[in-house]
Image (tube, rainbow, N blue to C red; front, side, top):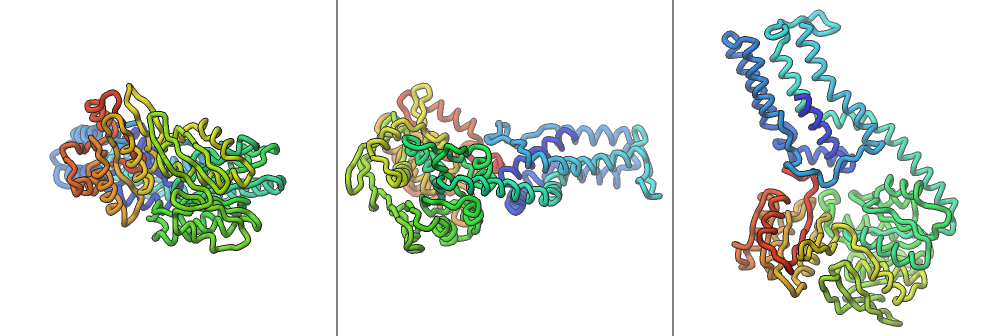
Length: 539
């Protein structure tokens, strides 16, 4: 039981970290996984056994027999720990300074009840009171109280996170204020630094890296790594990575709630703002797509006077942001319209090529990245780079050297099989582009492995059904769905297209999906991994 409590505590710390240390989102996760992870069948049944032994069989079952019975059930139910579904965690728990600060009170709270009931059970009385308890059984310990206390302590482990988070909240607020103050002071000492900020529902990280790589041809650029798009992530880069010789700072600004962009702009107000699109990512927390658009438009509102805004002309909600202010220079990009456009997109085992054109010139770009949405991301980067005076020929050379962003339509080769790794946070736009990319390959059989899309709120089922229709119409040879319940709308969508359902397989885990794919695929085939559910979604 002690081992299970320790591992269970670590697991819920992991989930809390994956939910961004947000108590409301953590509570939402607990509600969704109440019977599977919070108050489990094992907790209930173990207490039923204690009740039956204590109330109905106490005169016939000796203390030693009770110890044996409760130990056998305890070991069989709480000995194994399979919360991760038997697989390694995809994004492991990281003991950052914040997590360490949280773990200290959390650990003490988790230990208190087991320690207290153990003492009471063996001592035979409750400290600081005159109350005594009747001891029975092995070593004069009350086995029923001991077992009940340990199981109750195990069950309450996730709730101790709320108490620990409230205890550390003043400390975290102070730490945040301190790092924000340092970051703002550092930026104020670099008046010639150009700050570029990117926001949007999808494509922020890819666009950020493209802007960084294009501008690095001529300038000293500092950018946030990975998906660092929170106040503390941005502050960490400014305080630790930004140096005096840097001329450009490229920041990614994420948002899950209204007001988040304002909070980030309070730290670093942009000279150039970039808005990729307005989609349905985090619709669950925003409530509506209009609220998402309103939040993303904050970046344009907070751009410094006389600055520039690079906008996706193919997205009506993004294009409308140009009406917010008339003192900015707007650069529109798009596949269909805009000042900078792209066309003639072609795919192959080495990547893709396309033609970029503006009012003055056109240039062929070749990239290892895939997908029409990555063409749009590149056009956004081209729009920024042109404002710095770079020519298309220079940008084309830089683009050809770009490494794919990990797990974002990343092209790989494995035993003669072409692998398209798009495992990072699938969304409706990205999923559609990924399927179109897979379908565009002319050689080999085409296979998709996917668990579908999550965190889409009330429209999740609708979007997954549409996703299934796209799969069914793409002419694929094998579809492998991971997970039974959340992929049911995908199956329905596929079936509605007349696709041969014999070629649709549903499996329980990514490991099983890989085995199924390996049994089917041969050299020359193409496999798309579309989305990979986080550890917090495992059932």
